[in-house]
Amino acid sequence: DTGVSQDPRHKITKRGQNVTFRCDPISEHNRLYWYRQTLGQGPEFLTYFQNEAQLEKSRLLSDRFSAERPKGSFSTLEIQRTEQGDSAMYLCASSLDRVQPQHFGDGTRLSIL
Amino acid sequence: AQKVTQAQTEISVVEKEDVTLDCVYETRDTTYYLFWYKQPPSGELVFLIRRNSFDEQNEISGRYSWNFQKSTSSFNFTITASQVVDSAVYFCALSLNYGGSQGNLIFGKGTKLSVKP
Image (tube, rainbow over all chains, first blue to last red; front, side, top):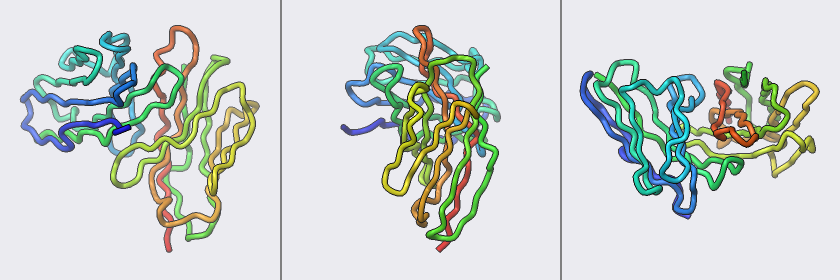
């Protein structure tokens, strides 16, 4: 069990640029979740996948955000035309099913200059 | 609406003291799960415990214990004989457990615990 892996760990970019993050879940986990965490706050749900299907999106996920999980394995989260308010830690989690505990990756910290 | 409140923003204790972290949740659903996660300075969220809404038995795991009381909608976490390595931010979280639920976690704002030597 290698755990949830996220890449990169840190991303610094200029406002207006596009960024993409990758998450590799625990191999047998069907569910994959994306959360965003800002300083001093708990993680907030963004979206989740059941295998390759994206089944729910939070209202936090504006149309500049898109997520994919093409073959039901790894997932990508893309932010287009980044804004200052996008600066946050982006966390990925996976679980076997709806009720099993979610296991989190180390996160990708995004800083917008 | 569902909500988790962790009223204690920061707690500072001296090593070997006992400390209790409070968690109050709100939901109209009768079936749900409660969780505690630890986030050390390195950043990764570490799962500590999951509790089903129908199981009000308290649980002890080493120096950690959890007190679940549906009557007060609370799920408190106690660390006995705290150690410096316990220093972290602790999050309480709620997820719903009905057929159409996403299973996503609803987190509180966290309690930062500092254990001083």
